[in-house]
Amino acid sequence: MEQSQEADRDGESVITYRTVEYIVAAVVLAVSILFLYGSYIVGIGWGIVGPQSGWYPFYVTLIIALCSIATIIKTLRTPRGGKLEQTFIERGQLKRVLLVLVPAALFVLGMELIGIYYAGTIYIALFMRYIGKYPWWRAWLLAIVINIIFFIMFEIWFAVPLYRGIYHFYGWTGY
Image 1 (cartoon, rainbow, N blue to C red):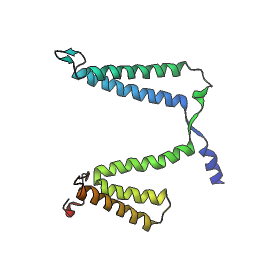
Image 2: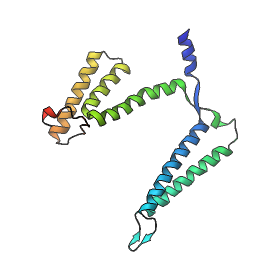
Image 3: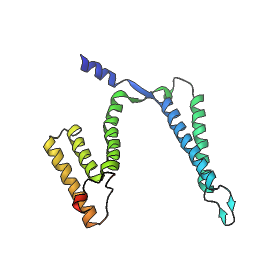
């Protein structure tokens, strides 16, 4: 009985198009305001040799900010009951997105802490196990082999060191 109730809930609306319009426009407007301020600090006027370094970014960002404001106004003025009230994403769809997004975010954090090779190995192995349903031994074996190949390719052949993280666990390798 619980599975059918859970399956029924997977089709529930999590967020509507109207809400997404407001959120995206507000975030873009907030970032635009930050960029406008930064451009103003470096100079938006005309200098001795031409435009100052903030001139072009200021006016481009101003256009983006005005478009965000226009989006908010348009969304406010759109009558209820139309396309904007339809479901943007359902619970089941959001679960599938988060199933990929959360591990990817943890991978980025892991890269910062333990470096790209260790974080990549863990990420690939866990992704293969939980998303791909591979057995543990195969997931770890392939993850380790793939990252050893990457290590050899980047560190030895191309002599391009990749980020090792705050905790440099493979200093014993000489790299």
